[in-house]
Amino acid sequence: MAKSKNGTKKNSFFEKFANAATKFTGSSAAFISATAIVVIWAVSGPIFNYSETWQLVINTGTTIITFLMVFLIQKAQNKDGKAIQLKLNELIAAQQGASNRMVDIEDLSEKELDQLHKFYVTIATLAKKEADIHCSHSIDVAKELNELKLKSNKHFKHHDNESARPKS
Image (cartoon, rainbow, N blue to C red):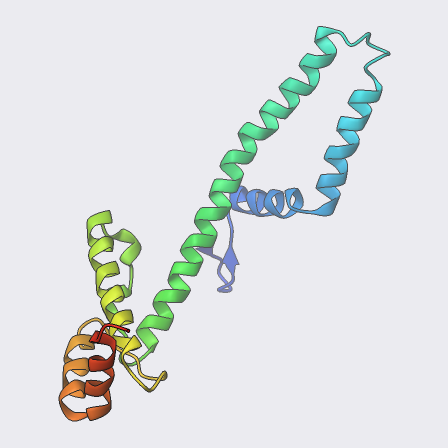
């Protein structure tokens, strides 16, 4: 996206077209139009004796529209996904105490994401042991904080002993 001389954003022709097409195809008017086309096609069947050409018209039309819509939908999803990721990155970066490892994690490999998932499973397990539901941890300090709490707070030790005991 380029900026014009006065500093406003200037979208390319394709960007403007794709945005307008996405907005229209998701509207009630588009659905009503598509329904009307199908009804007109169905009603015209007897006029054309339900010929192969009559069937070919709707099949070709829907195939072309479906083919183009796949790319339009993917473009819209990519743009929305990128915008959401940027917003989440801003929230993480702005939050003191949040792990900056989370910024741009969508670029990590599946193995690296699985490793981070294990950290959060550990954090969730540790959080279940706490009496205060407002406590939170980052990946880096979750284990250390929990160990300090266990050493200094008898409630946590008592709670751990209770959960470790088999229920009778």
